[in-house]
Each structure stands twice: as structure tokens, then as C-alpha cells.
Image 1 (cartoon, helix red, strand yellow):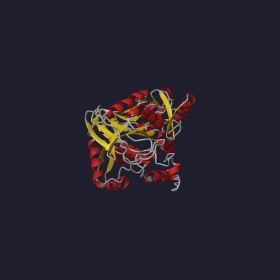
Image 2 (cartoon, rainbow, N blue to C red):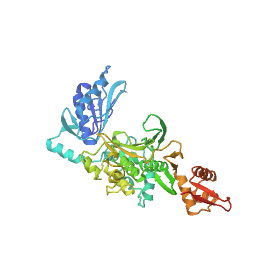
Image 3 (cartoon, rainbow, N blue to C red):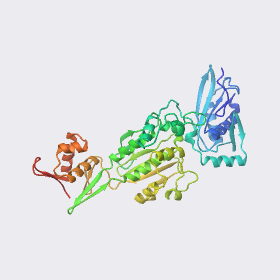
Image 4 (cartoon, rainbow, N blue to C red):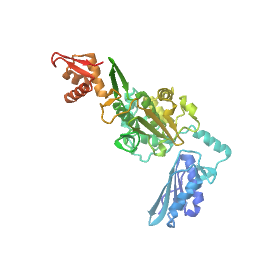
Length: 432
């Protein structure tokens, strides 16, 4: 049986006796395309001849790749039967260009692995600083649609040309296939984006796991923002005839941290950003660390070195990000540099709460009371019209009659409002 021909992304080797040459081909293909497939048990012309398999064959291949292909990648290694013959298939993806094999650097040209000269290696490294791996690597599936992304463009006041939209947005690579960025922005994908809530200050007791992935990244970002804003309750404190209000956390800081995590994470690593909510803080974690040409002090000043330039451009067009670089300084102004834990492969942003959040909403907190968004809206309506009726509150708020009555009961129990006089002729009073 014949399985095709060698290309810039596919290499055939008859046996693992050519393991060193095979690893060289993997490095070469990674440097050219960020992706490569190597088969053992296949002749150069594509004829399947089979590979002798022992108990440790796959492990030895894996260990050799780990030891001699640098920077290290995690390959997918599979044993397949083709025409009743054993074949080993190895698939690699990576963005940490340049890759070396046995200490030497190579570049794929057609079906050949050519060693790079020092000058060519420097050019490759210079090119890599401005490359965008999301636009190079093909999407794992190619049956993609982008209706949600198009709606986002129209909502932002931009024109969508159905014929040229995909090319203009950069959703295809040089081979004409949908790329990883397209997969992120498609109507459906298998990318998980979670908001996980814990009852205390650590991960011992998980309370809730909300899943917002599986859809266009634009939609997923908005869903997370909506959910986190819904828990950003207001604490109202009353005493000495004074009434003060304090939000649980600064929503603008969270928004900047979350959008940056989604736009600048290294999506090709396979670890999407996530949000963890504790009783005293929110943590936003993203993969990849800082870009190689950006140090911490430059980062703190708001100097931007986009990891995913094309993706950032799209979000800029949609109005999600600006080029002013004010996001990081905003977070620092509110929470200090200690909000950032910058590791080699991850960036963790911690937004502390202004007071400890209780699991049962509405409980007293340091002589204050916790007010959620719906309750705050009702307080605002009452402040504007002390004679407002339940029917009118239903009309202006969009909440149901039963929910309004529940809110009013809660606010009265918290001694935030009181009713003076009867329900027909009386009025609401916000206690201050």
C-alpha cells in the first residue's frame, strides 16, 4: 500500500534505525511550518513496508525526541496498522522556533532537511519575533463557520464582505487551510474556557464550574465578563447617619486582565486561560509567560509585544483592546505589581476582593451588608422615585413580579430600605 509522498510537512523513514534522521526532519519541519508528521515503516516513495515493534519501541522513540529535539515538544506517537503492517506515526506542533536536532539547526525545503548557516539561523530568529504561530498551524478540523464573528463585526459597525471576509481576517494559512486562529474564532470548537468557584481561599472545596468554551472566542470572552460582573456585588455600610457603598472588586481591572489573557496566551500550547474565584480574590491564569523580547519592567509600564498579532488586530477592530497599553498600569494602580505572578510558562493575575465574599449572599460583612446587582438596581429606582410601585419596578427592571418582591423583602431584612405608610399611599425610603 502507498500512503502518498513526502512534503514540507511529511517525512517517511523505513525503520527506527533512521531515528536520528527522523528527529532531524521533525526539527526541520517545525522550523518551517510549526508542524510536522514523521512515519516509521514507510519507504521514501510512500510504500508501506512495516516497522518491527518491541515492548520498548515507542518509549525509546519518545525518549530520543525528548533528549535530542530542543526546545522540547510533546509529540503524539501512535502505533498504526496499515495493510496489516506496523507503522509508527509521530506528529509534532510547536511555536518555540528555532528548533534544533542533536545541536544543529535545519530548515525544510520540499522534502529535504537543509542545515542552516549562522546567517540563515539569525534571520530565522529575527523572523520568529514577528511571526504569528496561530496563523501558520492548521486547525485540527476544517469544517468551520464564522457567523458569530461576522455578527461581532457588524455590531462594531464594520462592513462584512462574505466573499473576502475569511481572507481579510487572516483565517487561512499559506496552504489555504483554516488556521488555529480560525479554530478559536469559529462558531463551534472544542476549546474549554472555565470559570471555577471555590468556597474558601484555596482549591480544597470546589463549589461551581462554569463552562463558556466550545464557541467563538469573542462570545466566550463576553460570557465570562457577564458572569463575573454579575457576582461583583456592592457592600452597603450604614452608620452614624452615613451610607457608603463599595464594590467587591474593580471590574475594569478584571476586564483588562481577562482580555489580555485571552489575546496573549499561547494557544498552540493547548492550555486555554481560566478564571478561578475564591472567597477573597479572583485569579486569571494564561499560558506562555512574557514574550522573549519583553522584560518585566517593560511589561509593568504597559509596553505591548503581542504574542498573537493577528488575533490582537481582530480584537482591536472589534473595540476590545486599545494600543495605548493602559491595561497593565491600570491594574497596577489599583492592586500593585504584586497582582502579577510572572512565571516562565504562565502569567497569573490576582485581583483581591475589597472584603471577603460570603457564600450565602446578603450576610453581614464587618457591619455592612452585601448587595447584588439586581438589588442595587432596585435601590437606584427607589432613590429616583420613592413612590414607585411593584408594577412599575417590574416594568423598568425587566424582572418578574415574584423576583421584585423577593428583592424588596431582602432589602428590608438587610435594613437598606423601609416602607413608610401603606402600599397605596406610602413611599419607600432608602436608609442612609
